[in-house]
Image (cartoon, rainbow, N blue to C red; front, side):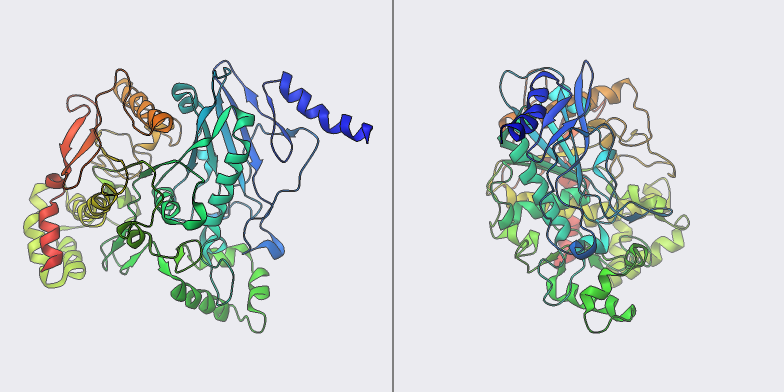
Length: 504
């Protein structure tokens, strides 16, 4: 027993003297240390969801005793880009901290990446600068995607929510290991963008996530995104990011039938290739489940949310970020056809409100309609519900000169995801100019202040007031000449028009 005690104590002693080594609850890890930050990558927070663990809740990691290398990312979860990438052994996370020892435990910020519940990884978002500048611990995670994260079948426990369960497992890991990295387990901020923002909203409403975080930041992920036929993209049918459990069961059963699965359907699907599962394009979290009893937007409306402070916002030109997915530019004739498909006999009203002549191209006119209809109106509705329940700070990222990675079209503006390079330099292959880097620094400080105190204000920053019921304005985040300050987003996104259109 004495020998065993020596063996298990050795890594702990090493961690106490070497800042590159931290002992987690599962075993010691060695990361990278510079004069500005410490970074630990590829730390497993759950067992590999492979074999019989495919479509099981995240399981505990097998502990280790030797110091584990944490100087490079773990596998991304399986996803399809121009080719199939990733590996099912993918439940890893990354931790960044300031290089210096803190005088008190630091806030922990857990980042959920975007990608439509079909793509992305935590390692794309390096938190070193945010950690140092904000004096916080930043954790970025992977979670199961596509059919591997959201497939459901009748009687499959946890069906439609495995990716959301992974996020909760990572939050439990962050709470259990915060002190080892100099963090405060009682001060965790959950933040994310796009599908990550939608995930934050889901966790706000999930009873199984209660007390796992104390603050939330929702970036470009209003709790209810839904669209009409050809409104999100041409020829894409009406849809939403959420699905009822009964519908998810039907979709999973249809997939099994298409693959010839009979008898033990689950066993058959567990033998299916990853590529075959990616073909299914399943990627919608299911509600009517223990993880999500209600549609997140309904839960917010009914007040069934964690009572924590919230920052929530969108970008000025959200839907321009989806124009690179168009098979060809939209012509004036095509624009009118799309409006007719989406809005039927109300298309003429939309065309009058958004004439092609008011925009640089018919494609940009179409994107403006989708931005206001799909994103901005929903954002205003959700904020109106949130402010009645929790402290709520709203923003709009408005730098229309934000650089866009290829492929892109002219006049991308403040497109979906354009703020990411400001918060996480290097998150996209773009270069920010000096004014944009200065805006990014201010945004990082706002986000970190919020993690520290539950409100974003601090020395040297333009004041950001909380929203109240009926507020039409948001905190605009822009470079000069507009700079940072309140803007009437309801007017700019024609909220009165859209509210009138849907009520007629």
